[in-house]
Image (cartoon, rainbow, N blue to C red; front, side, top):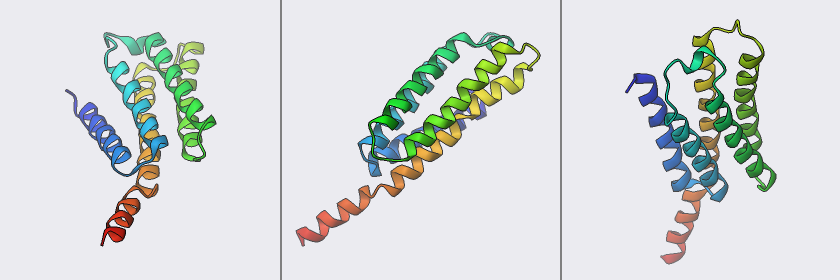
Length: 144
């Protein structure tokens, strides 16, 4: 496994753990959307995929966009709009590659992969700020 892939999955696992430890249902759903998209992307065969328009990755990113968008529509939280916006940027990178053949494969691949970090950061921050640990502290305080 390449170092950048291991780093990404470490950040992803930390985000999922934080969402389930401190987050509310919205953060948990966002973490599962990100995890599902990442696992589906990892299942795609990578032989020369960035040389042309990456069709399977485009459709996975489209499904992830739909997931974040529906989360934003049915949530009272604001962070899903940020995740949806970053995912839309990722989808637009694919569309730009589809329209222009002169985009190099390395920047296309890097932009497609690294756009997930801001999404994970938004979910992580929302999870840590949602007050899950405060609820636990209140339970312990009332038990005494």
